[in-house]
Amino acid sequence: MRWTRSLIPTLRDDPADAEAISHKLMVRAGLVRQLAAGIYVYLPLGLRVIEKVNAIIRQEMNRIGGQEIEMPVLHPAEIWQQSGRWDVIGGEMFRLKDRNGRDMCLGMTHEEVIAWLAAREIRSYRDLPQIWYQIQTKERDEARPRSGVLRTREFLMKDSYTLDLDAAALEVSYNAHKDAYCRIFDRCGITYVVVQSDPGMMGGSGSHEFMAPSAAGEDDVALCDGCGYAANVELARGVPSASPASAAGKEEVATPGARTIPEVSAQLKIDPAATIKSLVFMGPDGPVLALVRGDHALHERKLARALKAEPRPAHPEEIKQHLGVAPGSVGPVGVRGARIIADESLRRGVYVVGANRDGFHLTGVTPGQDFPCEWADLQVALAGEGCPNCGKPLRIERVIEVGNIFKLGTTYSVPLGASYLDERGQQQPIVMGSYGIGPARIAAAAVEQRHDQDGIVWPWAIAPFHVHLVPVAVKDAAQMAAAEETYRELRAAGFDVLMDDREERAGVKFKDADLLGIPIRVTIGNALAKEGVVELRQRGTRADRRVPKAEVVAAVREMAQTIS
Ligand code: ATP
Ligand code: MG
Image (tube, rainbow, N blue to C red; front, side):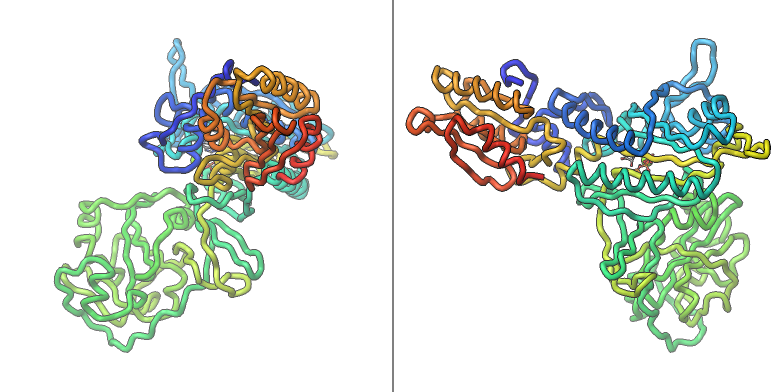
C-alpha cells in the first residue's frame, strides 16, 4: 500500500475524551474513528488488524472442526421469549418493531438462533457432535460504552456453539475450544490468563474467561503463583485474615453522628475488621440484609448468585420503610421483614453492628447466635488473602476479558425444542456450549500490552503491515527507484508493505512510523548513494541494521524471525 493513496489520518494529539492508551493510540494512528458513543468506523489500517485476527481465529476454529455459518443480526422476539431472555435482559437489548408491529430485537448473542436451527436440522445421535461458528456483528446498548473499541455498542464477535450428546461429550468440545483459544491468543501475541468465571446470564454449569492483563480492563482476577489457582473476583474466594478478638460484652454504645465503618471504628477505637457492614438490597422477594466484615467489600454478583436473582441497592426510603431506620444505623440484630445473608468469614468472631437505632451501635455480637442468618460467599477477594487451594497469598490483577467459554448444558435446547433421538429411539435434549471472542478487544489488548511513549508496537501476526518502507527524499530519483524496487521485492517475498511515499520531512515520517508500530522499518536515504546501503530498524527494540540494498529481503526475513 502507498501512503499517498491511502486513508491513514494520523493525529499528533490524543482525542479529548480518551483515557485508555489503546483508545488514544488507535485513534491517533488512524485505525478507527468514533461515529457516536460506542459506535466506531474501522479505517483501512484498523480493518487490516481485525482481518488478521479473524484469519487466525478462522484457522483455529476450522482446525477443531468448526463450520462457519452466518446468522442474522435482526431477530424475531419469539425465540428470545421462548428462552425466557426477552424478559430477563433489560436495557442492553436493542428492541424494535417491524412495520406490522411485530416485536424484534438486534442480536446480542446467538444461543437462541442456534437452538432454533438445531431444533430443525438435528434429528439423530448420528448428526452429533457439531461445531458452528460465525464472525459477525453484535448489538448491545452497553450502559457505559468506553475505552475506545474495548466496550462498544456494535462490535464484531467470533461466537461458536457446540452441540453434543451428553455432558461427557460437551467436556470434549469444551476442552477443544479451550485449547483453540489458547492457540489464538498465543498467535495474536497477547499475554493472558485463563480463569474460572461465573456463568451469569448465560446459565449453565461452568465457564472460563480469557483475560489479558491491562490497566484499561474492567475486570479483576485473583491469581495464585503458588498453585496456579486463577478466578475472576466475581467467583474467587480468598482465605481472609483472622478477625481481631473483641473483649467487649454485648451492649448498646452511643456513636453520635457515625454512619460509616471508618467513622464507627474511629469513635470506638477498634479495627474496622471487628465491625460488620450491613447493606440493604431489594431481592426477588423483598428486602435483603447482606453482611460483610467491616474491612471487606461486597461483590454484587456474589450476592446475585446467592439470591439466584439480580438484587439492587435499596433506596433510603425503602430501608426506612422495611427496617424502620436510616441506612447508617442498620444492623442484623432483631431484624424482621428482611432476609439476612452473611459472608462466610463472619462464622467466626464477635463484632460491632448497627443497633437499628440512630446514633447507636451494638458491641459483642456473634453472628448466627445473636441473629439468625444464611451463609454465603459475598466478599470481594483481596490481594494478600490466602489462596483457597494452597494458602499462599493471592495476587489481584486488572484485566481485559478477551474471550470466554461456557458449558450451557440444556438451558437453551430444552425451551427451544432442540433434541435428538438416541440409539434406543428416545428423545434427548442436545447439550450445548457457547464460546465468544472479541477481535477488537484482542487488537486493543495488544496495543495496551505493547506500546511505548512513541506509539504502538504491534505483534508480528496482527500488525497492519510487516514492513514500513520509508524513502526519505521522494524527489530523489535514485532513492525512489530503489524504494519501488524494494517495495516490489518485499511484496513478492510475501511481506505486507506500507510505503510512505509522501513528500514530507524525514522527521514527520519517522514519527508516524513509530506511531503506527509496524514491526520493521526499512529506510532508504542518503546512505544508499554514499554506501549502497539501506537501514532496517525493529520497532520494538529499536535495533538498527545497515545492509546492502541487494540483501534487504534476506535481512528483513532474518529480522522477522526475531519478532513475535
Ligand atoms: P463483558 O463482561 O466485558 O461485558 P461479556 O461477558 O458481556 O463481556 P460475552 O457476551 O461473553 O461478553 O461476549 C464474548 C466476547 O465478546 C467477550 O469476551 C469480548 O471479547 C467481546 N465483547 C463483549 N462485549 C463487548 C463490547 N461491548 N465491545 C467489544 N467487545 C465485546
Ligand atoms: Mg457484557
